[in-house]
Image (cartoon, rainbow, N blue to C red; front, side, top):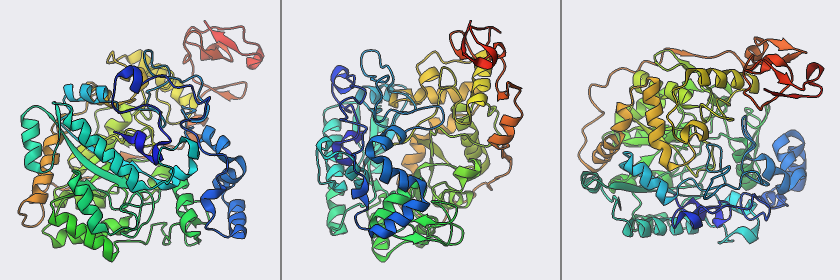
Length: 576
């Protein structure tokens, strides 16, 4: 929430507060280039590096080469494109969205338009939300990539953005009688007991506290209500090492230190940019002396320690400090269970393996499970068929693995307005679209046949904004997941906070053993596509296209008629 102030205030369209007709007004589809756009010359992001090194590295790293050659205009069109969506950045003239019709946004796939408007937060509260962690976020590297004329704060200081967001959160709470900022676990219990929403303030920034004295800075944000934070985000900093994931953050780290590591290949098969990795492609950076001092000061204040973006080494180091302090609780605000992710995603250090989940359990922490858009593996312990990739069915399998198998407390780790896509719909044009086009068509066909719609915008828009968090839980329940743990996750969070603030005596006693079995890795996309029928050398899904869809031949259509199609779809036709 309030992320319109992130990145110098130059990326998002829409506001978190105000009347809908103003806060959620239609945009111009990017025609004016005043949001969701990168500056033309992105070479300025790499001025720390020797030009010869930059040229040599760009020759080996396709994304770096694209950034240097296409520039911001080209990258703006590509940055949000994933299977099933062309995104909402750059030119998006068909997605102006906003009131009154919301054509194009909010949707599951937006990363440049508002998802956390106050009216949607109130709807989520009315549907049962009782505790929410609100992160003040920013990333100076992205800010510097945005045209200066679009930035409200052109200096691109992450902490300046953070202060603005924290003040907005305080102002919002002061002007609404149904929400209050919780400053302690006792506060949170009282707020929830009074039937209100407890807001817990956090910080998520790669250069948290900048170069300033961290103790003075911690005092400042603590006085603004911050009671949890991440000591690292996308990049290594003076407190510790970050978990590498998307290649764009390798480039951001490279832009700071110009390091090329050949010990293991994350950025390409042969090398890793920016991060110092070992032979297993894990960041070797752990907890620094300053980082340890910060963690111990947070513990002294009863603040919650969020491990969401920590390297594995940093997580282990922080866990060791937690053990020294009678198993002080650690938690992950937004995480993927590594064992449930497809191989290409599971290799990312940002995913959370079961051995880290065990650390979280021992300390009395919890996992905020990312309401993600990715395909996942099958979990045999789930009652929900994993047959609509990237949708609530995928989330159900991951959630059931964590809840039933790993037996860890789970909440929703939505990361809305977090520059990342959300849970896809099970119906409509984007249904089940996380894998590949032909399989998505088959899965969408089968979802239509089965029904089980909620009758809300979640059916076809997916997790597009805060108000439909309750719809996601309702959908999980109707599909067959036991959502009781999710419905009590607010209490789990407060109990974790109480453990941080109160006396502790060792690990959580009598933990049930974790059972990580039952995960079935699906065949590769190549194998699954090869199993589909073909016509004119084209794999396809029989009877998948509804009336009005473009088609190549009759068998693709639900009606069995592809009107106007020539031989092998030359020209294409339209399904009757």
